[in-house]
Every structure is written in C-alpha cells, then in structure tokens.
Image (tube, rainbow, N blue to C red; front, side, top):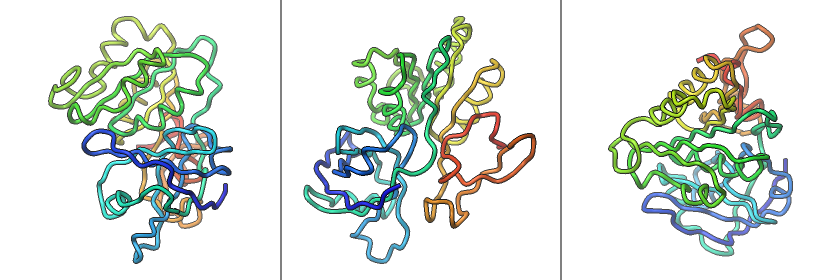
Length: 259
C-alpha cells in the first residue's frame, strides 16, 4: 500500500454518463493487481473528510485508470479535474481476484454496469480467454464490449429495456449459455456488480459445483480495515463471522458469503 500524489494525465468521457480518469501514480501502478481498488481524496470537496473508493480499470506502465459514473457530490466534483491537477491516492487496497485459473476451467465474467471495469483489468491477466456477460439498464450502460472483442472474448449483452442485446437481466443470457451445455466447460465465475446479481451468479456456481469470485461493493470509511464501516457476514472454517470488505475483500468466493 502506498500514499501517493497522482498527477492527472487524462480525463475523457466514455459515453454520456461515464468518464475515465487516468493518473500517473508509479508506486501504486507497479503493485496493483486485478480486483484491488484505490482510495481517492477529492480536493474540490473541502468539507469532505472521507476518501472515495474506485476499482482499478487499467494499468499502463506508470499510469492507472479508473472508470466512474457521476452519482453524487464526489464524482460530480471529480469532473472538474484537468490535466496536471494532483489528487491524493492510497492504494492498491484490498485482496483482488485469484489469477491461478484451473487448467480445465473456462473463465466466465459477469458484469453489471461499470462493474465491467475491474473485470477488464482481470481479463488482461487471465491465462486464456472466455465469455463476458454484461448487463445494464440501457444501451449506454454497456461499456467496454468492443475492447473485450478485440481481445477475442465472447461477449453476451443484456439490457433492461432491450435497447441492446437480450431484454432482461444479465442472468438471462448466462442461463441460456449454461443450458446450451457450456456448464460442462467447467466455468470459473468472476463477477462485479449489484448485490442481487452477485448472489445470482454465486448461486449458479454453487449449483454447478464450481467457484464464483464476487467483488463486493460496500460504503467505506477508511479503506484500510480500521473503521469497520464495510463489514460483511461470511462463513470462515465453518463458523459465521464478520469480514471487512475493504481489507479482507473486496473479492470473496461465493460459498463464503452469507447474504
């Protein structure tokens, strides 16, 4: 973990509601792993004491990128960041996705909205390609599909309003894929998105006797496990206990999570 001043080297829109912020943070970038996150302090919010957590979307040399949506005061203030501005970063934080994919397993990524960002970072580190399922409310919420296709991933899409891909939840094309016999491909699931989606993916993995690695999203205070603001009930060695999502996670195997 490093505390580092990040220099803004890029800040561009990705569609009408999302933006990509790229920072020069040599120390953090050198050690970041897929599924980890950073804690960012937004100088424009002078009255805000707490940092904001963001999943890592991409690492290119000394540069780290996050993909975010404007959803509150913090992300609204971030939109004013411009090249050469400086922001305070703590990271990389948390425990990410395991990269030791079993030899017989097919990686299956399941994303809800901009939960696809850490899965893109993961896909670039997995030993082989697989299938990506992306879900969103509408077509403009489907991000990075072309980037995955360029890496020769099989991309399946679902939107709530049917404006792109299958109409309905992302579990609809996932279930179609599994029913077509692809469950015999020994899927290893990796998922990031809303809790309902994570539970649904985990349930399917358990029924199929596979594994699902779930990236949980919780409101965080300190980001380093001290404040206990982001606890999640889990099962550890047969006993129910509480884990800190920021430090013990954010990635957990589905069998360990008590919903």
